[in-house]
Length: 235
Image 1: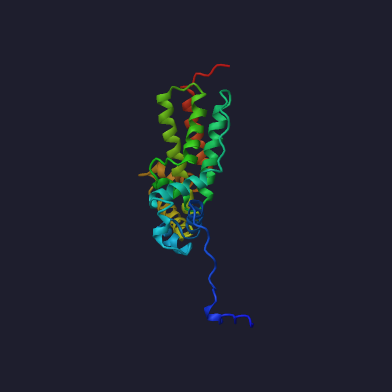
Image 2: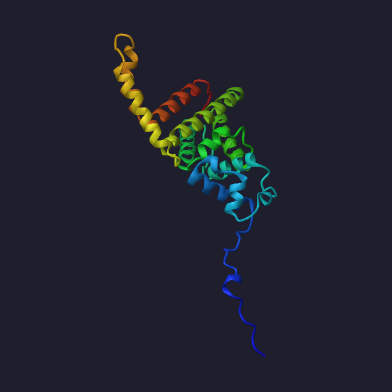
C-alpha cells in the first residue's frame, strides 16, 4: 500500500509554535517591548500580539495592566540583593543598597517610569526589598516612626533620580530632545544680566554640567548623615 502523499506547501504549518503562556512569559515579553519601544507600547493587546494569542488569554495570568506593571517592576528589581543588617555599618549598607536600586532602575530601559507610576507595589520581590531596607534602618536604632518616613523619602529619591536619568537614554528620542533643551537653557542663563540675577549667572555651569551620579550620591550622603543624628547604636 502506498504511503499517503505529503500535503502541498501552502497547507503545511509555517508559523512558529506558540510559547507556553505563563505569567513569567508575559512579563518577559512585556519587558522586551518596554526596552525596545518604551512604556506607552506596553499594552495587554500588544503583549498578546507578541505572544501570538488574544488579549483575553493574558487575563488568566495577569489581572490588568496595573498588575502587569507591578510584575515587571518586581522582575527588574529582584536582582538587587539586600545585605544582612549590620548595626555598625548601616550607613554604608543603606547607601550601597540605594545606589544598586538606582542602577537597576536606570539600566533597565523604561522601568523607572513604570516605578514612578506604580503606587505602593505589593508583589513578593518588592516586599522583600522593602523589608530589607527597613531592616537596615531599624538596626541603626532610629525610632520606627522616623524610619517609616525615611524609607518613603529614600524610595522617592531613588525612583525620581532613575526616572530623570533614564530620559537621557530613552529609545523614543527623548534623549536628543533633553540634550537640546539643556543646551538652550544654558545659553539663556548665560545671556542673563549678572547684576539682576547674580547667583543664577554664577551657578550656570555647576547646575547644568555637574554629573548626575555625583548629585545623587551627594544627596544620599546628606540624607543618611541626617538620619544618623536620630540613631542610637551602641557596640
